[in-house]
Length: 366
Image 1 (cartoon, rainbow, N blue to C red):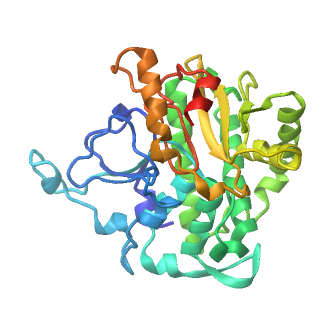
Image 2: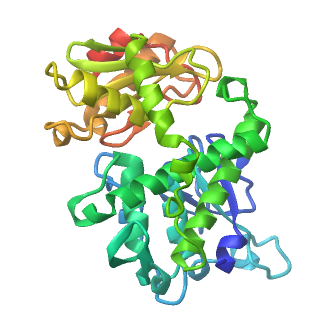
Protein backbone atom coordinates (compact mmCIF):
# COMPACT_ATOMS: atom_id res chain seq x y z
CA UNK A 1 0.00 0.00 0.00
CA UNK A 2 1.22 3.47 -0.86
CA UNK A 3 2.05 5.10 2.48
CA UNK A 4 0.51 8.46 1.61
CA UNK A 5 -2.73 6.69 0.68
CA UNK A 6 -2.87 4.95 4.07
CA UNK A 7 -2.38 8.12 6.09
CA UNK A 8 -5.16 10.08 4.41
CA UNK A 9 -8.57 10.86 5.84
CA UNK A 10 -11.36 10.24 3.30
CA UNK A 11 -14.56 12.28 3.48
CA UNK A 12 -17.72 12.23 1.35
CA UNK A 13 -20.09 15.00 2.37
CA UNK A 14 -22.20 17.94 1.29
CA UNK A 15 -21.87 19.56 4.73
CA UNK A 16 -18.77 21.75 5.20
CA UNK A 17 -18.98 21.17 8.96
CA UNK A 18 -17.78 17.59 8.34
CA UNK A 19 -14.45 18.97 7.10
CA UNK A 20 -12.38 19.83 10.16
CA UNK A 21 -10.41 23.07 10.01
CA UNK A 22 -7.08 21.45 10.95
CA UNK A 23 -7.03 19.31 7.77
CA UNK A 24 -5.18 20.09 4.56
CA UNK A 25 -7.95 19.46 2.05
CA UNK A 26 -7.68 18.03 -1.46
CA UNK A 27 -11.20 18.22 -2.91
CA UNK A 28 -12.00 16.30 -6.09
CA UNK A 29 -14.88 15.78 -8.53
CA UNK A 30 -17.14 18.49 -7.14
CA UNK A 31 -17.22 21.19 -4.51
CA UNK A 32 -18.90 20.87 -1.13
CA UNK A 33 -21.51 23.67 -0.92
CA UNK A 34 -20.41 26.40 1.48
CA UNK A 35 -16.82 25.16 1.78
CA UNK A 36 -14.07 27.78 1.53
CA UNK A 37 -10.49 26.65 0.82
CA UNK A 38 -7.73 27.70 3.18
CA UNK A 39 -4.16 28.41 2.19
CA UNK A 40 -2.56 25.15 0.98
CA UNK A 41 -5.95 23.54 0.22
CA UNK A 42 -6.71 22.35 -3.33
CA UNK A 43 -9.92 21.80 -5.26
CA UNK A 44 -10.53 20.26 -8.68
CA UNK A 45 -14.09 20.38 -9.97
CA UNK A 46 -14.78 19.50 -13.61
CA UNK A 47 -18.48 20.27 -13.15
CA UNK A 48 -18.46 23.53 -15.10
CA UNK A 49 -19.08 24.68 -18.65
CA UNK A 50 -15.47 24.24 -19.75
CA UNK A 51 -14.64 21.31 -17.47
CA UNK A 52 -12.93 18.14 -18.68
CA UNK A 53 -14.99 15.02 -19.39
CA UNK A 54 -13.35 13.30 -16.42
CA UNK A 55 -11.71 14.76 -13.35
CA UNK A 56 -8.12 13.55 -13.72
CA UNK A 57 -7.84 15.07 -17.20
CA UNK A 58 -7.63 18.53 -15.63
CA UNK A 59 -5.37 17.63 -12.70
CA UNK A 60 -1.57 18.12 -12.73
CA UNK A 61 0.47 15.01 -13.46
CA UNK A 62 2.74 14.24 -10.47
CA UNK A 63 6.50 14.08 -10.30
CA UNK A 64 8.24 10.83 -11.21
CA UNK A 65 8.96 9.72 -7.64
CA UNK A 66 6.52 11.75 -5.58
CA UNK A 67 2.74 11.79 -5.51
CA UNK A 68 0.93 15.10 -5.56
CA UNK A 69 -0.04 14.53 -1.92
CA UNK A 70 3.56 13.95 -0.86
CA UNK A 71 5.02 16.83 -2.83
CA UNK A 72 2.40 19.26 -1.51
CA UNK A 73 2.34 18.15 2.12
CA UNK A 74 2.85 20.96 4.61
CA UNK A 75 4.06 21.33 8.17
CA UNK A 76 2.13 22.91 11.00
CA UNK A 77 4.37 25.98 11.29
CA UNK A 78 3.52 27.03 7.73
CA UNK A 79 -0.16 26.17 8.11
CA UNK A 80 -1.05 27.65 11.49
CA UNK A 81 1.23 30.12 13.23
CA UNK A 82 -0.26 29.13 16.60
CA UNK A 83 1.38 25.69 16.42
CA UNK A 84 4.54 25.62 18.50
CA UNK A 85 5.93 22.36 17.17
CA UNK A 86 6.59 21.38 13.56
CA UNK A 87 4.50 18.37 12.54
CA UNK A 88 2.95 17.17 9.33
CA UNK A 89 -0.58 18.45 8.83
CA UNK A 90 -3.16 15.69 8.44
CA UNK A 91 -4.34 15.50 4.83
CA UNK A 92 -7.87 14.72 3.67
CA UNK A 93 -9.29 13.88 0.27
CA UNK A 94 -12.86 15.11 0.06
CA UNK A 95 -15.63 14.71 -2.50
CA UNK A 96 -19.27 15.72 -2.50
CA UNK A 97 -20.54 12.37 -3.79
CA UNK A 98 -19.03 8.91 -4.03
CA UNK A 99 -18.52 7.47 -7.49
CA UNK A 100 -15.75 5.73 -9.43
CA UNK A 101 -14.59 8.98 -11.04
CA UNK A 102 -14.01 10.50 -7.60
CA UNK A 103 -12.13 7.36 -6.54
CA UNK A 104 -9.90 7.55 -9.62
CA UNK A 105 -9.16 11.23 -9.00
CA UNK A 106 -8.25 10.50 -5.39
CA UNK A 107 -6.07 7.54 -6.40
CA UNK A 108 -4.37 9.80 -8.93
CA UNK A 109 -3.38 12.11 -6.05
CA UNK A 110 -1.86 9.19 -4.13
CA UNK A 111 0.28 7.83 -6.99
CA UNK A 112 3.59 9.11 -8.30
CA UNK A 113 4.40 9.49 -11.98
CA UNK A 114 6.33 6.24 -12.12
CA UNK A 115 3.39 4.21 -10.85
CA UNK A 116 0.94 6.00 -13.13
CA UNK A 117 3.11 5.14 -16.14
CA UNK A 118 3.65 1.56 -14.98
CA UNK A 119 1.99 -0.99 -17.28
CA UNK A 120 -0.04 -4.06 -16.36
CA UNK A 121 -1.14 -7.33 -17.92
CA UNK A 122 -4.91 -7.25 -17.52
CA UNK A 123 -7.07 -10.35 -17.76
CA UNK A 124 -9.82 -8.33 -19.45
CA UNK A 125 -7.45 -6.64 -21.95
CA UNK A 126 -5.42 -9.54 -23.35
CA UNK A 127 -3.78 -7.88 -26.36
CA UNK A 128 -1.52 -5.29 -24.72
CA UNK A 129 -0.08 -3.95 -21.51
CA UNK A 130 -2.01 -1.00 -20.09
CA UNK A 131 -0.69 1.87 -17.99
CA UNK A 132 -2.17 2.67 -14.60
CA UNK A 133 -3.06 6.11 -15.95
CA UNK A 134 -5.10 4.65 -18.82
CA UNK A 135 -6.83 2.26 -16.41
CA UNK A 136 -7.92 5.15 -14.20
CA UNK A 137 -9.03 7.24 -17.20
CA UNK A 138 -11.09 4.38 -18.64
CA UNK A 139 -12.80 3.69 -15.32
CA UNK A 140 -13.56 7.40 -14.91
CA UNK A 141 -15.06 7.61 -18.38
CA UNK A 142 -17.32 4.62 -17.88
CA UNK A 143 -18.47 6.03 -14.56
CA UNK A 144 -19.35 9.46 -15.94
CA UNK A 145 -20.35 8.58 -19.53
CA UNK A 146 -21.23 4.86 -19.51
CA UNK A 147 -18.56 4.33 -22.14
CA UNK A 148 -15.00 5.19 -23.12
CA UNK A 149 -13.50 7.35 -25.90
CA UNK A 150 -11.97 5.88 -29.05
CA UNK A 151 -8.40 5.97 -27.71
CA UNK A 152 -9.47 3.70 -24.83
CA UNK A 153 -11.88 1.52 -26.84
CA UNK A 154 -10.17 -1.75 -25.95
CA UNK A 155 -10.64 -0.93 -22.25
CA UNK A 156 -14.43 -0.58 -22.48
CA UNK A 157 -15.27 -3.97 -20.96
CA UNK A 158 -12.54 -3.65 -18.32
CA UNK A 159 -13.84 -0.21 -17.28
CA UNK A 160 -17.47 -1.33 -17.19
CA UNK A 161 -16.62 -4.27 -14.94
CA UNK A 162 -14.46 -2.07 -12.68
CA UNK A 163 -17.24 0.45 -12.10
CA UNK A 164 -19.71 -2.36 -11.46
CA UNK A 165 -17.38 -4.05 -8.98
CA UNK A 166 -16.98 -0.83 -7.00
CA UNK A 167 -20.78 -0.63 -6.87
CA UNK A 168 -20.97 -4.21 -5.59
CA UNK A 169 -18.52 -3.22 -2.85
CA UNK A 170 -21.04 -0.57 -1.81
CA UNK A 171 -23.85 -3.14 -1.63
CA UNK A 172 -21.70 -5.39 0.55
CA UNK A 173 -20.78 -2.48 2.81
CA UNK A 174 -24.45 -1.62 3.35
CA UNK A 175 -25.10 -5.14 4.57
CA UNK A 176 -22.01 -5.14 6.79
CA UNK A 177 -23.07 -1.83 8.36
CA UNK A 178 -26.66 -3.03 8.82
CA UNK A 179 -28.07 -0.23 6.66
CA UNK A 180 -31.49 -0.27 5.03
CA UNK A 181 -31.66 -0.60 1.25
CA UNK A 182 -33.89 2.49 1.38
CA UNK A 183 -31.55 5.47 1.79
CA UNK A 184 -34.42 7.71 2.91
CA UNK A 185 -34.22 5.89 6.23
CA UNK A 186 -30.54 6.72 6.83
CA UNK A 187 -29.38 9.36 9.27
CA UNK A 188 -26.90 12.05 8.19
CA UNK A 189 -24.23 10.27 10.25
CA UNK A 190 -24.93 6.99 8.47
CA UNK A 191 -24.62 8.72 5.08
CA UNK A 192 -21.29 10.25 6.12
CA UNK A 193 -19.84 7.04 7.57
CA UNK A 194 -21.00 4.79 4.74
CA UNK A 195 -19.98 7.06 1.86
CA UNK A 196 -16.61 7.96 3.39
CA UNK A 197 -15.77 4.32 4.15
CA UNK A 198 -16.76 3.27 0.62
CA UNK A 199 -14.64 6.09 -0.81
CA UNK A 200 -11.61 4.94 1.18
CA UNK A 201 -12.09 1.31 0.12
CA UNK A 202 -12.38 2.27 -3.54
CA UNK A 203 -9.37 4.59 -3.54
CA UNK A 204 -7.11 2.11 -1.75
CA UNK A 205 -8.18 -0.67 -4.11
CA UNK A 206 -7.26 1.44 -7.15
CA UNK A 207 -3.97 2.54 -5.61
CA UNK A 208 -3.03 -1.05 -4.79
CA UNK A 209 -3.97 -2.19 -8.30
CA UNK A 210 -2.01 0.64 -9.91
CA UNK A 211 0.95 -0.31 -7.73
CA UNK A 212 0.77 -3.95 -8.87
CA UNK A 213 -0.22 -5.24 -5.43
CA UNK A 214 -3.66 -6.60 -6.38
CA UNK A 215 -5.95 -6.92 -9.37
CA UNK A 216 -8.12 -4.02 -10.50
CA UNK A 217 -11.81 -4.04 -9.61
CA UNK A 218 -13.64 -6.31 -12.04
CA UNK A 219 -10.64 -8.45 -12.93
CA UNK A 220 -11.95 -11.18 -10.63
CA UNK A 221 -15.55 -10.96 -11.91
CA UNK A 222 -16.85 -9.49 -8.64
CA UNK A 223 -19.90 -7.89 -10.24
CA UNK A 224 -20.76 -10.91 -12.40
CA UNK A 225 -20.52 -13.29 -9.44
CA UNK A 226 -22.69 -11.00 -7.30
CA UNK A 227 -25.48 -10.94 -9.88
CA UNK A 228 -24.98 -7.23 -10.57
CA UNK A 229 -25.71 -7.41 -14.30
CA UNK A 230 -28.70 -9.69 -13.76
CA UNK A 231 -30.13 -7.04 -11.45
CA UNK A 232 -29.55 -4.37 -14.10
CA UNK A 233 -31.66 -6.42 -16.52
CA UNK A 234 -34.35 -7.11 -13.92
CA UNK A 235 -34.65 -3.41 -13.07
CA UNK A 236 -34.67 -2.50 -16.77
CA UNK A 237 -37.80 -4.57 -17.26
CA UNK A 238 -39.36 -3.32 -14.02
CA UNK A 239 -38.94 0.34 -15.00
CA UNK A 240 -40.47 -0.20 -18.42
CA UNK A 241 -43.23 -2.68 -17.62
CA UNK A 242 -44.43 -0.72 -14.58
CA UNK A 243 -44.96 2.38 -16.71
CA UNK A 244 -42.38 4.46 -14.88
CA UNK A 245 -40.75 5.49 -18.18
CA UNK A 246 -42.67 8.19 -20.03
CA UNK A 247 -41.99 10.66 -22.84
CA UNK A 248 -42.80 14.38 -22.59
CA UNK A 249 -42.09 16.63 -25.58
CA UNK A 250 -39.44 14.18 -26.79
CA UNK A 251 -37.70 13.91 -23.40
CA UNK A 252 -37.56 10.46 -21.85
CA UNK A 253 -38.36 10.59 -18.12
CA UNK A 254 -38.39 7.98 -15.40
CA UNK A 255 -40.04 8.02 -11.99
CA UNK A 256 -37.94 6.27 -9.33
CA UNK A 257 -40.05 7.48 -6.41
CA UNK A 258 -41.23 4.88 -3.93
CA UNK A 259 -39.06 2.04 -5.24
CA UNK A 260 -37.29 1.78 -1.89
CA UNK A 261 -33.85 0.83 -3.19
CA UNK A 262 -31.06 2.19 -5.38
CA UNK A 263 -31.61 1.95 -9.13
CA UNK A 264 -28.64 1.96 -11.49
CA UNK A 265 -28.88 4.50 -14.32
CA UNK A 266 -27.72 1.71 -16.68
CA UNK A 267 -31.12 0.02 -16.23
CA UNK A 268 -32.87 3.17 -17.45
CA UNK A 269 -30.49 3.61 -20.40
CA UNK A 270 -30.86 -0.05 -21.41
CA UNK A 271 -34.65 0.27 -21.31
CA UNK A 272 -34.48 3.34 -23.55
CA UNK A 273 -32.18 1.60 -26.04
CA UNK A 274 -34.31 -1.54 -26.18
CA UNK A 275 -37.87 -0.27 -25.95
CA UNK A 276 -37.92 3.44 -26.86
CA UNK A 277 -35.25 4.41 -29.40
CA UNK A 278 -36.14 1.77 -32.03
CA UNK A 279 -39.74 2.97 -32.13
CA UNK A 280 -39.73 6.76 -31.95
CA UNK A 281 -37.62 9.90 -32.19
CA UNK A 282 -36.43 11.23 -28.84
CA UNK A 283 -34.05 13.86 -27.54
CA UNK A 284 -30.71 12.92 -25.95
CA UNK A 285 -31.51 14.47 -22.56
CA UNK A 286 -33.24 12.37 -19.89
CA UNK A 287 -34.89 13.28 -16.59
CA UNK A 288 -35.16 11.05 -13.52
CA UNK A 289 -37.30 12.06 -10.56
CA UNK A 290 -36.45 10.34 -7.29
CA UNK A 291 -37.14 10.51 -3.57
CA UNK A 292 -35.27 13.08 -1.50
CA UNK A 293 -34.09 11.84 1.89
CA UNK A 294 -35.87 14.79 3.56
CA UNK A 295 -39.21 13.90 1.92
CA UNK A 296 -40.18 15.53 -1.36
CA UNK A 297 -38.24 14.81 -4.53
CA UNK A 298 -35.10 15.65 -6.44
CA UNK A 299 -34.03 15.38 -10.08
CA UNK A 300 -31.20 13.84 -12.04
CA UNK A 301 -30.54 15.06 -15.57
CA UNK A 302 -28.60 12.66 -17.75
CA UNK A 303 -28.27 11.64 -21.38
CA UNK A 304 -28.40 8.69 -23.73
CA UNK A 305 -24.73 7.89 -24.51
CA UNK A 306 -25.36 6.36 -27.94
CA UNK A 307 -27.83 9.03 -29.08
CA UNK A 308 -26.73 10.64 -32.38
CA UNK A 309 -27.12 14.14 -30.84
CA UNK A 310 -25.18 13.26 -27.68
CA UNK A 311 -22.58 15.98 -28.31
CA UNK A 312 -25.11 18.71 -29.13
CA UNK A 313 -26.14 19.83 -25.65
CA UNK A 314 -24.55 21.12 -22.46
CA UNK A 315 -26.41 21.37 -19.16
CA UNK A 316 -23.91 23.94 -17.87
CA UNK A 317 -24.61 26.34 -20.77
CA UNK A 318 -27.70 27.97 -19.28
CA UNK A 319 -29.88 25.01 -18.25
CA UNK A 320 -28.69 24.80 -14.65
CA UNK A 321 -28.91 28.57 -14.23
CA UNK A 322 -32.53 28.59 -15.45
CA UNK A 323 -33.51 25.73 -13.16
CA UNK A 324 -31.80 27.30 -10.14
CA UNK A 325 -33.51 30.65 -10.81
CA UNK A 326 -36.90 28.92 -11.03
CA UNK A 327 -36.29 27.18 -7.68
CA UNK A 328 -35.45 30.48 -5.97
CA UNK A 329 -38.47 32.19 -7.53
CA UNK A 330 -40.73 29.49 -6.10
CA UNK A 331 -38.98 29.58 -2.72
CA UNK A 332 -39.37 33.34 -2.47
CA UNK A 333 -36.03 33.78 -0.69
CA UNK A 334 -32.34 33.03 -1.08
CA UNK A 335 -31.59 31.79 2.43
CA UNK A 336 -31.63 28.13 1.32
CA UNK A 337 -29.30 26.72 -1.33
CA UNK A 338 -31.45 25.57 -4.25
CA UNK A 339 -28.67 25.67 -6.85
CA UNK A 340 -28.67 22.89 -9.40
CA UNK A 341 -25.22 21.54 -10.28
CA UNK A 342 -23.42 19.20 -12.62
CA UNK A 343 -21.45 19.00 -15.82
CA UNK A 344 -22.16 18.89 -19.53
CA UNK A 345 -23.97 15.54 -19.65
CA UNK A 346 -25.01 14.84 -16.06
CA UNK A 347 -26.59 17.23 -13.57
CA UNK A 348 -29.29 17.50 -10.95
CA UNK A 349 -31.10 19.45 -8.28
CA UNK A 350 -29.34 20.04 -4.99
CA UNK A 351 -29.17 17.16 -2.53
CA UNK A 352 -29.39 19.65 0.36
CA UNK A 353 -33.15 20.18 0.08
CA UNK A 354 -36.01 18.79 -2.03
CA UNK A 355 -36.75 20.48 -5.34
CA UNK A 356 -39.77 22.78 -5.53
CA UNK A 357 -40.24 22.27 -9.27
CA UNK A 358 -42.72 19.96 -10.96
CA UNK A 359 -41.60 17.59 -13.70
CA UNK A 360 -43.43 19.72 -16.29
CA UNK A 361 -41.55 22.83 -15.13
CA UNK A 362 -38.20 21.07 -15.30
CA UNK A 363 -38.80 19.83 -18.85
CA UNK A 364 -39.84 23.28 -20.03
CA UNK A 365 -36.60 24.77 -18.65
CA UNK A 366 -34.14 22.23 -20.06
